Image (cartoon, rainbow, N blue to C red; front, side, top):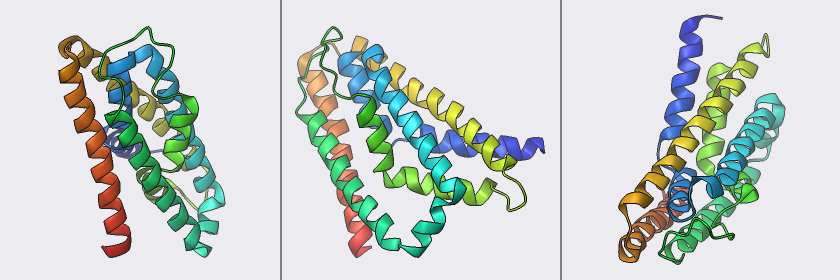
Length: 201
C-alpha cells in the first residue's frame, strides 16, 4: 500500500480525534477533577466503543442505515440528549480537585455509550469508510481501523494529560467552577446547536 494513503489515514484519524468534541471535553473535565488515572477507563471505553462502531459500519452495517434513515435520526436525537446530560453533569460537579475520590465522573461504559450516541463519531466513521475502503479488498479498511484505534487512543490520552496538568494550575474551587461551567456549557451549547441544525438547519 502506498505511503501516501497510510499518511492520509493517519492525518484523517488524528484530525478527527484531537479536535474538540463531546468526548474530549468530558475527558478534560474528568481528568481535571479526578486525575488521569481515574479518567483512563472512560478514555478506554471511548476508544474501544468508537473502534467497534467503525468495524460494524465498515463491514456492512452502513447498508442497513442507508435503507433505514430513521435509525440514524434516532441515534442522533438520543446522542444530543446524552451530550446535554453530560454537560449539565459537568457544570454541577463538585468544584474541587479530588483525585483520591472513588466516585469518578465517568467510567468505561460512559465513554463507550457516549461514542455510540455521538453524531460526530458516526460521521467520522462513515466518512473514513467512504475514503479508505475498497470493494476489491478488506485490507485497506482493516489498516484504517488499526491506525484509527492507535491514533484515537493517543489523542484522548493527550486530552486526559492536559486535564491533569490544568489541575496543577487551577487550585482554587472558584477557578475550577468557572472551568467546569465553561466546559459543561460548551457541551450544552453544542447539543442545542446540533438540535437546531438537525431540525431547522
